[in-house]
Length: 447
Figure 1 (cartoon, rainbow, N blue to C red):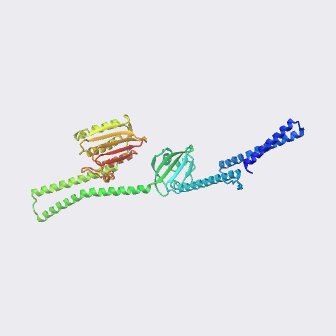
Figure 2: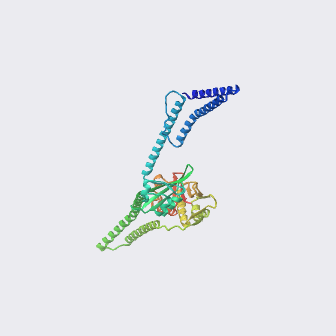
Figure 3: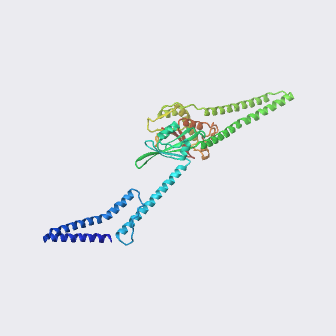
């Protein structure tokens, strides 16, 4: 029976029962008849309430099924066109859609979990209390473990790695060397802090870059050997040729027993002087190489950047005035301090500033800017900028290679030495250049 018709019928019967009950009370009918109609009216009222609540109970049951993720319930459909039938059809459609969404969500979860497990990069997620949520296969292989319940357990594998994982903040990275049964691993550790449903957790990635480092190291050695070979051959070839010429001439004189006149002695002297000069150049070259390979460990102290810039101004004052170069100094905040080796950072700034002076040689208005500031990531930055000729893109990729230089009289170790010093300070050096506009060298210090 349609819900509306059933509800109206029960209300009509209840109303009729109340009418007859009132009539019997007014006509003073017998006690038995009045009692009978009171009971009948009460029963009709109870049946009406139950009938009215039946639909609400179905809705409540439907909502409970949704709350408990129980989408398997099927409401009977008689296809008789009643409102109850329509309600059951809607319930079944909603439950079917929710069940489909749940299956799709579970499939996506299993898909991403499978992808997570099969990534070549090691991944670890753990909550603020240190409890590990997910540890993928690559991470197990890198750490040589089968399971990891708490992040503190990594301390027993490698304390440096545990310290990095605990202290790295979003976007932070660190290079850690760990021992492994397959050999030494160089792990690049990267961290991201996330909040999901008010729960804080950290995602840490571990990437073994040992092979990449070895490849880069081999490439660096090849570049170094190429440069060394070129420089040494340039020095030895004329020495060998000149020595052979002098030796041949002297042997010929000895065989002939001929006397050596003053002009020939002067030629021999000039040749020997040339050999000596080129030999000294070769010795200086090797000395430069040795100095590049043996940079002492930095002795850290607090450096006032304003005083550091003033010291640069004083050291290069004569050169700046001679070349008519304007040196501009900008420090924000004014009392900015840097914790580093003063003498080594001075050496870096001398190299960069002298390069800048050389770059602005042919510029009408010669300007060099020394800047010190703190960037958005809390890192201390020192910039050396010039408005000179700029650096060509091809050379830009090689300027940090030892002994590579674009200057006619340059040794090619200044920038390489500067990069080594910055690496010793756990920092970095970057360069940006635009032809005919200028160059900016940026020293980045991790605070």
